Length: 76
Image (cartoon, rainbow, N blue to C red; front, side, top):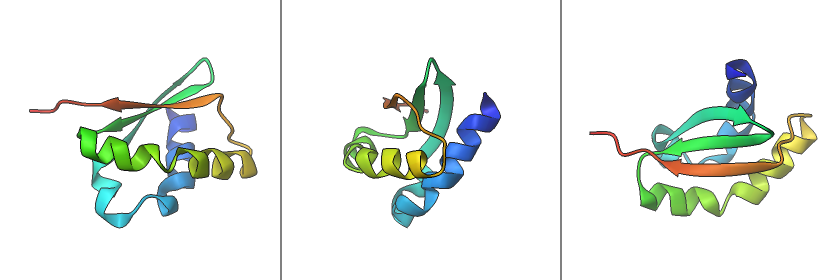
């Protein structure tokens, strides 16, 4: 499962703006739902706008998921 998440992250990485790449980390794929872990609400709002592009990219590479879930991680 970890490898699946890494493959998906590598596939969408070019679509993520350079300034946001350090704010986005891959989470697990569970029941066809892939989680992306984000550092804050601001980055989550910006990444949310890119989800349709991510889904299209993943489908084109044979890595489709049912949905992409965004989770804000409150690291201290």
